[in-house]
Image (cartoon, rainbow, N blue to C red; front, side, top):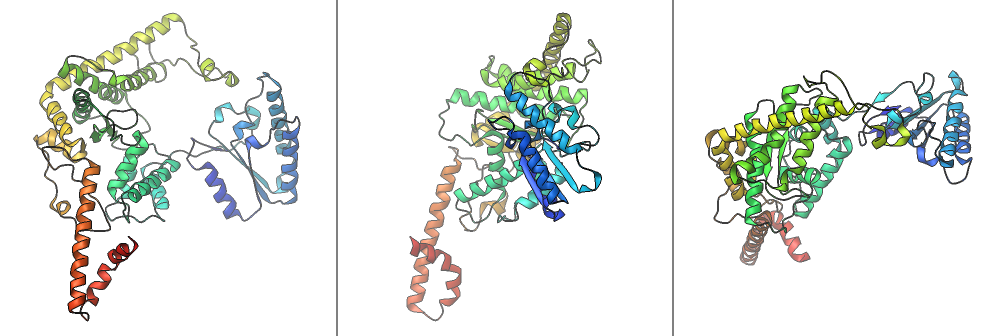
Length: 489
């Protein structure tokens, strides 16, 4: 039994087993057994195992087995009776062959908690193999697979991408590189550079940028100070996640966002670390209150996440000194009733009141802590916010320079004079101008510049060929791509 979250490669692993084993491979989905006619499911199970016995040794793979292997006992209708009949036949067939028949059964599911216990007993699916999300080394290796057929620029560092994508599954990483290829294609580039990957990560996490959205100056200021509040707290607290990027460019449902990445892959978190995480989430709302004296609706998602963490600390992790090391709201075991009914509180009203009181206490403690931090660092708060209003996006290096030295680092000289290379567009977000230049404007200017250089090169080439036809061969190879493009035009 392959067990793991969606997109981690359970089905892909089964395909790899089929290719390496060199034996007949029967693949079927759990939803393929049951149809509208009674008895079809059990009949298909019998047919599947009959064919497997004729072709043994062989492998049977049942994908999404939770569709047919759900725990029995619901009794809510004929459809469930038919599914139970199919499951019963599957259990009988799995017990019906001996050790030497050479049939191996592999199944995959992302919900092992709802499977029937009889399906998991020794002799059936007694060996469960967890297929979890990859760690940073695993993500780098997965990325190496998905970039094999994609032209990459020398600036692309797969290790950096792996560190920037914690929690991504294999399917997420595949989608990320496909998105980066699409971004590069829209920019008429021949290779994928790091700017394309950055844009792809932003698209996957927050959605496409909404450049056409009209935002008032007041809302823009609120967003800038809100994101600046998250950023400052992330820089001050040692246990908080590292601030990688902050922007006020609206994407999806967000008016702006700060990308906070963990310093390393974590599997356990301490109570102070969780408090720092909640404090960072509340930093945006606190910054609005300090600067404007009023609050907006932009912090609703922050509150939702902060409250969820505080509730888990109390009801699941036993981190409340008042309530003690107890866990509340565990699974009731009635999987067929649905998650809402299944997670119905199994504690008294008094305990519920104490839990709510403790959640409020945790949130208020972190809120006051955030207010103290931002009041002490109000100068940096305003500096980051004003810089965001000018350049719209700041990376980790720029944020650290603003926080430590109070200045925006100068752009590197290598980036200021890029050669005309395959239509590659580089945007310098550090350049200070009276009016901020958007990505589209910068791209248009770069294209106009490239077109002008192309025409000048063509004119020079024409003059040389008319005067000295024998010496023009050295430039022919260099200019042939642009000549071909001109002919196509």
